[in-house]
Image 1 (cartoon, rainbow, N blue to C red):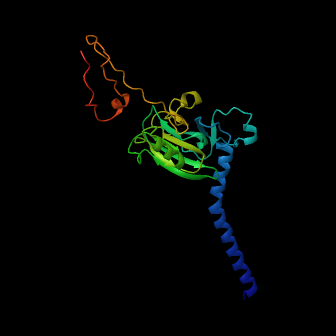
Image 2 (cartoon, one colour):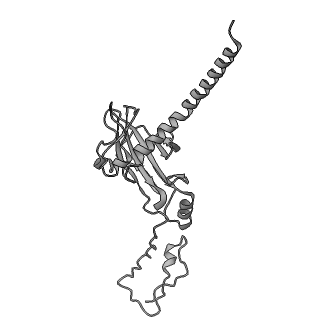
Image 3 (cartoon, rainbow, N blue to C red):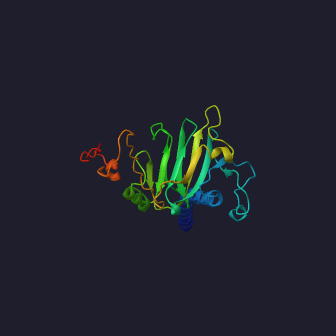
Length: 248
């Protein structure tokens, strides 16, 4: 007959083992991604797209302390799908919104925005975007409010991603099809994948629109009675019907 105390001890041990196992399953992926952020994204120069390649056996992530004095030309990552080519770009919203877009290739793509701790706060792909290439503006709520208030740029064609996370990175991958979807060198990659500060962000002063030049026909002379036209009238939606004709 099994000893009762032994049975209780066995059940308690199995219960604790189950809790530990569940904890490992839940927290290991998060800790792994967090380590990847520290080793992969943190050492990267902001606003520069880096090619990504799979890690070979025996390779390890770059040490962030050693990477400060090293020139990074490619990023190593684990468990990459060989059917896709990848690029990663770190960005900082402290200087203004960030514009993310691509050019020069077609096909299926996916895009993911993530931050320290492995927190993914936005993702999309070619199907969700109705076949269009990504054209994303990452911004804080305060920045997008300023953009709209100042009417600094048209936001109609942009996918707005509002976040309070200022230090983050974008991981973009494109289906290879029958050739390389993304260049494997940094120089060529910069002409295909853009991850840069928005050119018309809220921190830049907008130039006042120039008034149209008033052209007077050579056959007509300008006299003292010639009315002075308000340049703002040319900028309005309604024509200035009250302006008097030029005296002959």
